[in-house]
Image 1 (cartoon, rainbow, N blue to C red):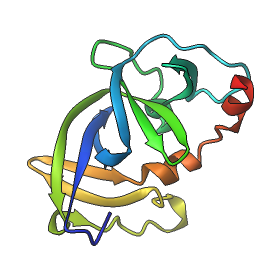
Image 2 (image 1 turned 120 degrees about the vertical axis):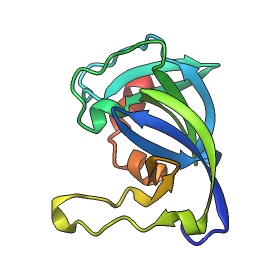
Image 3 (image 1 turned 180 degrees about the vertical axis):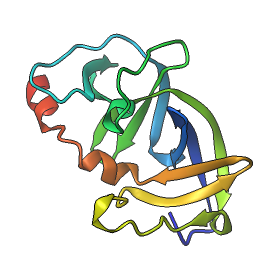
Image 4 (image 1 turned 45 degrees about the horizontal axis):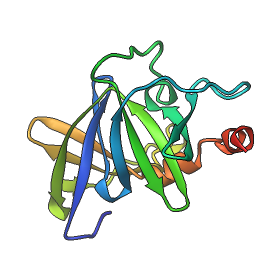
Amino acid sequence: MLGQQSIEVLAFKLGQEHYGINILSVQEIRGYDNVTQIANTPDFIKGIVNLRGIIVPIVDMRIRFGQLNPEYDQTTVVIVLNLEDRVIGMVVDSVSDVIALDASQIKQPPEMGVMLDVSFLLGIASVDERTLMLLNIERLMATIALGVVDKAAA
C-alpha cells in the first residue's frame, strides 16, 4: 500500500479505534446475522454462514483484538472479504466511509520491538480528527487458524 500514489480504504471501528482496509479486498458489507457455530474453534471464530452457496467463516475482529463481550446491535456489520482464493467475513462495530488516501497521508507504523507485533499494519494515516490504522488484511487473516473451519465445513 505504501509507495502508491493513492488508495481507497474502507474505514471501520473496533471499540474506540479506527481501522482501514484496502477497498479492493471488500466483496460486500452485510448486517450481522446468526451464524452456525463450529465446535472446538477459537472464541473469535463465530462460525460459518452460507452466502449464496459459499460457506464463509466469520471472524469477530473485536474478540481477535482483545475486546471482551462485544455487543451485537444494529451497527454491527460483517465485512465480507475476498482474499485471493478465500472468502472470509469479519465482524466489526461499524463501518464509517470509504476514504481516498494519498501516499503523503500514510506513515510507517512505529517499530515496537518484539513486545508488539505490528507486521499486520501497513501504515497509519491521519484523516480529519481520526488516526486510522491501515491493516494488511491478507496477512492478518493468514495468521488466523481457519483450517479448523475449512475442515468442519467440508
